Picture (cartoon, rainbow, N blue to C red):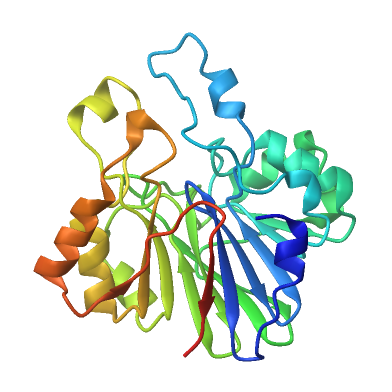
Amino acid sequence: MNKKMILDTNLLPEQAALYYLGQVGLLIQFRGKFILVDGYLSDSVDRMSAGGPVVWKRNYLWPVRPSELDFVDYVFCTHAHTDHADPDTLSAIAAVNRKARFFGPAPVCEILPGFGVPKDRIELIRADETMKLDDDISARAIPAAHEELHPDGEGSYEELGYIFSLDDLKVYHSGDCCPYDGLIERVKGCDAALMPINGKDYFRTNVQNIIGCFDSVEAITIAKEAGIGVLLPGHFDLYNCNMVNPAYFVDCIQRIAPGQKYHIFQPGERYILQK
């Protein structure tokens, strides 16, 4: 995957291309516009956690360099954790891209200027707010429970997910999230959903200080109940200390929702989405 491959992708007007960047990083292409969500294209976690209780060593390199992303129009971060609002990735994009608008909840917007993002290109987005990005593209923020909901004191939440409306296509990016009351109703009818499946357990939460997300059963059940078109599992492959075997996800599909469409990405892979 590289800049040329992305820009040479020709789509029909009713199609969107989804490029998986690893972890839950996603690049969306639709009618000549590009949306980056939670791009984590560096090894900053590896360096910052040196000597800590968890060894963060990437299992694969980033599939595209952030310095190549001068063509991206919109940059979204779901929350302020480094693998979702990465200082190295965001500062590299800000250095080469003079047009991109940057969106996130309040904790993200507070740190973006320190990454070199101009303040006039940072836009706060709140839960249940819809941002019109282009004539046929919009983004709606919804709460994300990273193991639980964290109100920000201003009527929104510290962690968000996004539903991107691309004309009549809808793509849900959950960010790091666990189930909560009302989530299924919010995401009903989405055509695709990128959701983590790394789950949570006592030792990761209490010993390794890793905050959990959906597990396979939870993600599949939500997709089934919400009528999600295609389920895209993520957040299971980058770090050994926080990974799960995707074969278990497939087994759960067969047991819980055998008719559910899904696709397991390889990093840098492109998926063409259409009705």
